[in-house]
Length: 416
Image (spheres, helix red, strand yellow):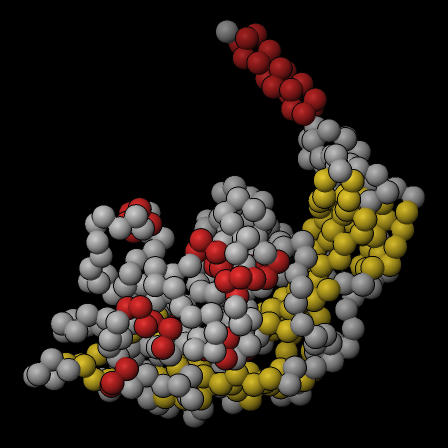
């Protein structure tokens, strides 16, 4: 997989085609990624050199094939926001815990960041929270949030779901909300060296009496993982929008007994809503939303004030205002030209590196079908903020590939 380089100094851009050439409905779309430096003292945003679009899932060498985040979704219904980095001590001296928060678009998401700690066991075999170790900085990836898998949970070898265990896609001891995390325990037998989560919801903390899940079927009563980065595709409930067959080993209720329904992250009765979502069908559009809970926005965020607390080594608060409007995007297909309304698909904030990126999508219907690999010339171009247009570069046609293969074969034959 080659390292992508931005197309322009000010932004990266990709143009591609989609739709059904046989049934009509063809279109061209563009992805545009812009980057801004954050002045931590004044809060001013200034454009910085482009950051490349990342994780092109059209690349067959991409691993994993569908990463937690990609800039290459051609369309999204809402805007995803993620904050990537570490928590820092407010004084630069070691602390055992610190509060981190993100305020944006009228919402606030708070996280209690706790130093490394482990489950401790009493002489009677009862688990308790170990003391936290001091830290000056601590990474805030999803693997430090509550979750994981207790592989000691037994299962019936005759259970038809055993195949999913073999394929490592499910397990009765898995915490469906975050298989990547730590701290999820089901079996009461002591286990040494079990890390506890570093990231917790201050309003739903893990306690001594919640360390053990009394029944793996009651996983949904455990704390929800708390993090600010991207939600991987195998996390509940995002995986349900790929296929309802991705239900956890022990299905949860689909009413207010489930925290995701209580908090509005899932509709009540979501199983009925998704009953036709099967493997082999296109994923539900909601599957493309990659942000953690509470950071998917259906409203415009342009001009919003953003405050990040606790994620910069020198500045306790990082505050800034987002651009008031998206870039001006004009697309031309043959002789048809339109000024498009870009959609802010995702925003990633890197507080300790003092920059953020904003990725936009825009789509235009095509007056006639164009088929990459068949048509040698496909007249599509995109202009951003009035600059010289970026042309679509079609892949080699099948005819050209066959001619190249024939010429190569001729060279080999002449050498022999």
